[in-house]
Every structure is written in structure tokens, then in C-alpha cells.
Amino acid sequence: MTPTTPSAAIEAIEIGRRYGNVVAAESVSFAVARGEFFALLGPNGAGKSTVMHILTTLVAPTSGQATVMGHDVVTEAKAVRRELGMVFQDPALDERLTAAENLEIHAVLYGIARRDRRQAVDEALTWASLTEVGKRRVRAFSGGMKRRLELARAIMHKPRVLFLDEPTLGLDPQGRRNLWERIGALRENGMTVLMTTHYMPEAEACDRVGIIDKGKLVAIGPPAELVAKHATTPGATLEDVFIRMTGHALRTESATAREMTVSFGKRGGEHTR
Ligand SMILES: Nc1ncnc2c1ncn2[C@@H]1O[C@H](COP(=O)(O)OP(=O)(O)O)[C@@H](O)[C@H]1O
Ligand SMILES: [Mg+2]
Image (tube, rainbow, N blue to C red; front, side, top):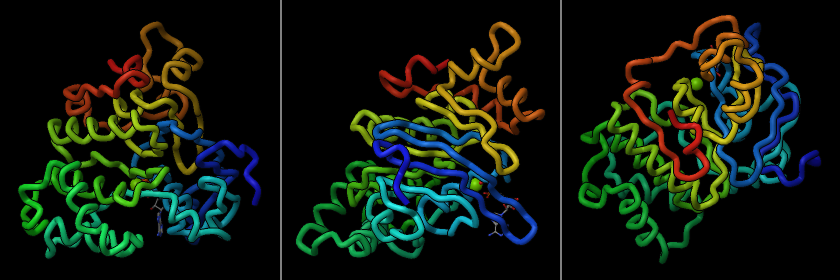
């Protein structure tokens, strides 16, 4: 397909996916500009991972079309895969191998030349602050260390578009902050990021948010605009907008969310609370 917004890094046009009788995603349309940080916000089962899997070519849409950097996710899947980095919702490291070995496998899979591999692995370990433990098996790592390693791996082949499916899920506040700092650094370097989250502060720190519920995108826009447009009471938050749009609360670990201050540098700063 020809993208209708040629400048977009990611474009989804009425994508949908059924699993038997289950409609995991239905008629979802949005575009993510180059360099933009975009969050899909929704509760468990909303269809966030399904949308991510369609856009990263892991599952085919049962309806609609999508492009990443102008390449169709179905007919040009190979080209799409070359453009993107992905951190999955569920950990995807080989726990029996060392951190360096996990990175090395990725370097081979992504065609990083043999002579450049050692350096690429070392740089990724440095970026993740894991140099000291590079030769240890991943099994012994904390959740935060594993997540950092996965993020470093996802950007190792220098993709222009990064997909993060609930990147901070299950991390303690400190681990979450640490990961956010690294994600923030990517933002300053111009990376395009599509992430999913059910943590309100993370969504509020993004350029734009798509609220997704029961497979459908029910609202889209910059967090402050969504609040201004849909809120009914003064001092309303994105959470109030979410409740208004979906008719139910987002299940959040609000204590954890409150403890976390998301700071994302210049562009995200104004959305921090
Ligand atoms: N492979 C699958 N087979 C059957 N049902 C699935 C599959 N993947 C997702 N679903 C269903 O689709 C819906 C959306 O799931 P998902 O995209 O994982 O939501 P989220 O990531 O927002 O939690 C859920 O009802 C889920 O059970
Ligand atoms: Mg999911």
C-alpha cells in the first residue's frame, strides 16, 4: 500500500485482528510522526500488544493496512523488520546465556559484520550500565537489569523506530525511573517510539496518547489537549479522561504510579506532574 501520510514513521489504517470469536483489535487508525513519542494507553486485554504485533509483522492483520517507514507490514515485512527495534511485553532473553552472548546473537541475526560485533556488544553493555556483569548469566539478573539489557539489544542495530510493549511492567519505582531515563535519552536523539502502557504518568510524558479499550481507539491527542477537550471538571487528569471515554477506571498500581516522577527532558517536561 502507499502510505497516506508519507512523512509518518508509523501509519495504521483501520487495522483489526480476530482470534476466532475474539476481536482483539478493531478498526484502529493512527499515525506516528518521525521523532514522535506515542503511547497506547489501555487496561489489560485492550488490544495494545495485538496492535504492536501487527505493526512489527509478528501477526498479520485480519483487516486494514499499516506501514512502518513507508513499508507495508504484510507485503514488505522484511523491510519493516530492518527498520525497527522491539522490546516485548514478556521477557525475551535466553537466561542460560550471558548478557554479552544474548547481545551477540542479536548482532548475528541483524547482520552486524563479524569485525564490528565485539564493539557493538561492548557499546550496548556500556549503554545499559552492564559492562561489569557482561559475562554473567542473565538468570542471575534483577528485573531492571534484564529490561535494560533488552532495551540495549533493541537499539543495537540502530533502528529508526522503536516499539516498547509495557517496558516498565513489573519493575520497582527505582528500576522504572532508571529505564525511563534511558528511554528519555533516545527521545532526545530523535528516535521514533511507539510504546504501550497502563501507567498514567508514562502516557502523560509522551507527545501524544491513543486511548485504547476493548480493541478500539477511543481518543487520540497530546495529553494536555485530551484533558482540555474531554474533561468536565477543573483540575481533571488524563485518568479522568480515560474514565469518561471508556466508562471505567484504568486498573493502575496508583501507589507505584504516584511514587514515580516521569521526566523526559524538554518536550515531555510540561506533561510531568
Ligand atoms: N494469540 C491469541 N489467541 C487468542 N486470543 C488472543 C491472542 N492474543 C490476544 N488475544 C486476545 O485479544 C485481546 C487483546 O489482547 P492483547 O492485545 O494482548 O491486549 P493488551 O496487550 O492490551 O493486554 C484479549 O482478549 C486477548 O485474550
Ligand atoms: Mg499486552
